[in-house]
Image (cartoon, rainbow, N blue to C red; front, top):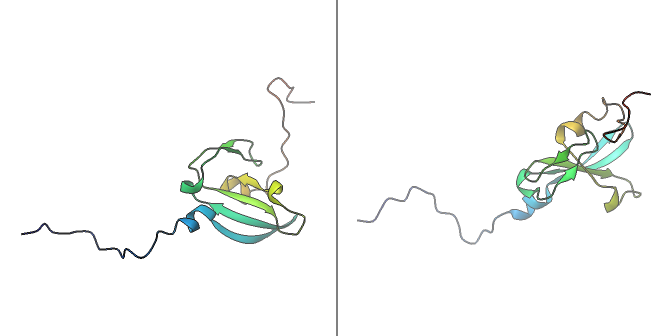
Length: 108
């Protein structure tokens, strides 16, 4: 008697859909400062460390996030920025942040 097979058989001809995971999902979003191309990057596709311009914190490998760049013809690959998903959604409500070094005075 052969052992029972609990897993369903998968067709061998169908390759895995890794391109969809690697590229993410594209879309155009309208904000106060114009239209932006936005791509969601899934956790498995995030392989490098980036700095989020919304909170100035690192986006570590394996963390799902958003990549955004201007949708018009003036935007290119150099204009892409990687954002935490929450920071991207809250960017209209957040004021501009000021970058300071550790030794800089906080006020004044």
